[in-house]
Structures are given as structure tokens and as C-alpha cells.
Image (cartoon, rainbow, N blue to C red; front, side, top):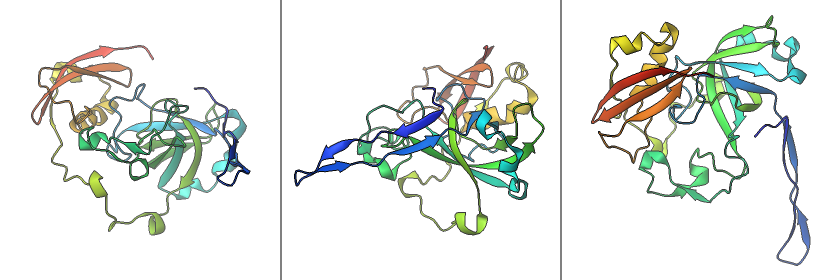
Length: 252
């Protein structure tokens, strides 16, 4: 869904007393888009920061390509990105969803999850700033690491991360808590790894180690394929071992 401006439409509804109530409208502009190595949902880390070596770029829309708009940002190390689940927009939302982490069988309230199928399809990611190019032909371009966002995703805002208020080490993570025992050992044959640019190898291996499969799929015979950085990567998983079977160059 290509949107320069995005809005939630106002709707008149009849209330319980027979009167009419207007749902307020909110209009937002897409300020930028993310340029990442993920051209599809499968394989994207489940949360931002899980694979800190993943590089992405924030490229502003023409209206917002002003160096003044990012003045002072160089003093911060991290950003919050507010973005749109553009592929989920317009789809019906449900009060409950089935989180993949729970095997796809247990229902949880949508507001207790980070499911894209929400009343307002907004995502939130915390990323590290690694560079700000003020002289790019595309205006200011921000390079970040740790993004969990698909290539081309619309961004509706960015905000600096403030460690003294935004960091809560004592916070509870509910059913999403993990002891990291689900990390896989990746068997990546050298002749296949050599096909991947050196700067992308570490990120790819960490993505695979996170086990990109849905939790309810565990057949050792099934071969999976994910798109990453201009390559199709095929693999199988047997227990705690992931075996890379092939690397194919694809056009982007």
C-alpha cells in the first residue's frame, strides 16, 4: 500500500442513547522509508536489537529532506522509529491473536502482544545510530543497526532514545520472556558463506541462529527459504542445529 499521507477515517456511529458520535480523525504523513535487507516478512528478527549487526538506512521523503530537521541528533546514540505495518493495513483486527512464540495455539489480547493486526497498524523499534549523512543526494540519511523492519516500510516518526527514562532493566516481559535456550547452532558451509558479502555474513548467521521459523513448525525434513540482502537462503533445522543448504542470488 503506497501512501504519502495516511489517515484514520472519521465515522459517525449511533451510541446507546440514540445519538450520533463522531470518531475523531487523525492524519499522519509518511516522513521516511526504511531501506533494509528484508524484502519479505519471513526472516525478520522478532524484535529490534536482537541482531545488532543488521544495517539499515532511514531515507526521508522529499518534503522532509532538510538538514535542520536532524540538527542535534548526532548527540544521541539510539532512536525510536514509529512505522506502519503497511502489509497489515486495511485488514480486520481481532481482540485476541495467536503469538508465534506460544506455538500459534494460545490466544492473547492484541494489546498484550506486538502483533501487526491491530486497530492502528503501528510498529515501534529501538535502533542504534551509526551514521548521519547530511550530504547525500537523498537529503539527510540516517544509518542504523538492529532494525526489525521490512525494506520500504513507511516511517511516521523518529524520536531520540533517552536512556535515563526509556531504559527499564527491571521490567517484566510476560509470556515473551526467553532464557535464550532457543538459539540454534548454524552449520554454514564455507563455499556457501563465501557467496555472501563479508559485511552481511555476521548478521545473516545471527538471524538464522534466532530460528526464523514459526514456533509450530519443527519438521527436520522441511526445507525453508528466506530472502536476505539480495539472496535466497535455504535451510533445514534438526533439533538445535540449522543447516544452510543453498545460497541463490536474486534481483532486488
